[in-house]
Image (tube, rainbow, N blue to C red; front, side):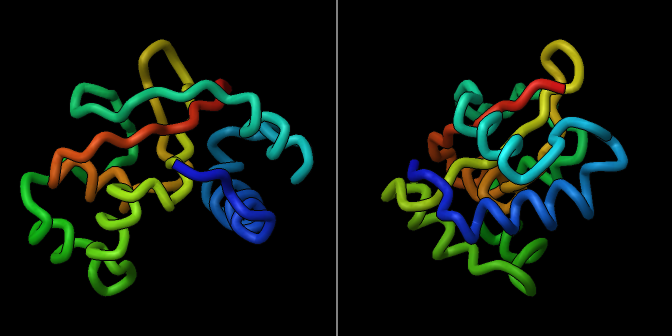
Length: 127
């Protein structure tokens, strides 16, 4: 697992939070800097199929299923390689109730990890 680059952090905040997640979790982050502080301090959990992920499109049983679901937007073979080598940043989950999570970022990474049973660490930010 690697850290997010500044441009990736901008994307995660401006697109994944402000566009897709802010209405569900208003006030979770008051600024891009607040987002980075909370992400940097966020605990890490390991993905497993028992996690309660409210908006997760998986889990999948094969990489072919992931390709069918995501190939028009994502290079799942590259993502699988990045998970194996640790060269991708972790998915970001928002914990909104005890043991319940919302996938803010990383749905495809989680899908690939579920399909090929790869270990994947996730950052968890509590709402």
